[in-house]
Length: 164
Image (cartoon, rainbow, N blue to C red; front, top):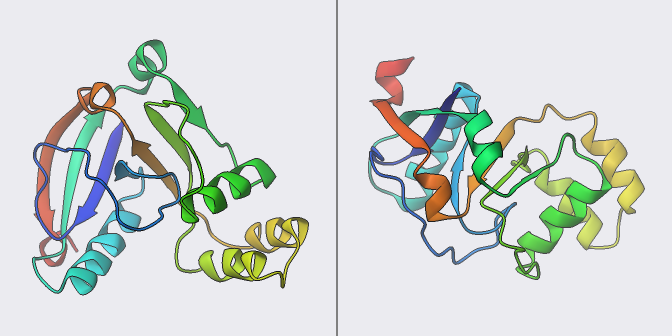
């Protein structure tokens, strides 16, 4: 399968970087199967970091081999289990159970207001799930171990303006 990573630089050799902010699935190297999502995220990274060029790096990945060799946690949809997992990671309260890869939907900019309303006590978990089901949700894969990163094969990269 083809995976995409959006950043402000080309990433030929992915690596695990300690995160200073809470992310959906915790610290790790994030990818998606949706090229559009990677392009969008690359532009966000450039704006946040105020440097670099919006770049999408592409990789080949054998998901069947990953299921044979790695510990994978997969959320098939934005349900209560996924929501609790994301909220726990966003609050930096989740202690990872040593999963090599976590797969599920992205709590992107359109989803975060719902999660913030939940955290602020304005929405119940059930109401948050109903709200999330109306959002267009893209997938994400968080590679959380060096062992997982060895299964990624760099293909190419391009700047977003070139790839449009």
